[in-house]
Image 1 (spheres, one colour):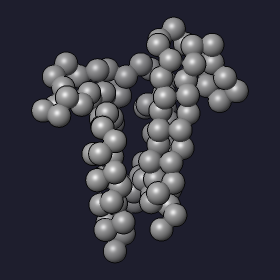
Image 2: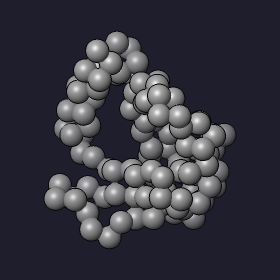
Image 3: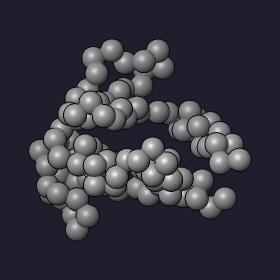
Image 4: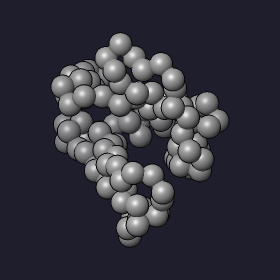
Length: 104
């Protein structure tokens, strides 16, 4: 059950850190929810960790121009393989509550 509640949060400061590169964007925080559970899904669908990281990190993400009805922003990897959606805390909690059901 621990795998479903684990989070990893990384602050991306302009000057960079020991974990992140320097960049010219506004500082931001990236939180990964249930990283082990989602890695399991990527493994099931044959998505190699290297491919996942290259898709998301090698080039800037494309922001899709129409936000969803919730006001969330959507980002697309440059190779069009992955979509990232911003969510409010309440929606994130709801989605995390659903996650264990996919492993039954």
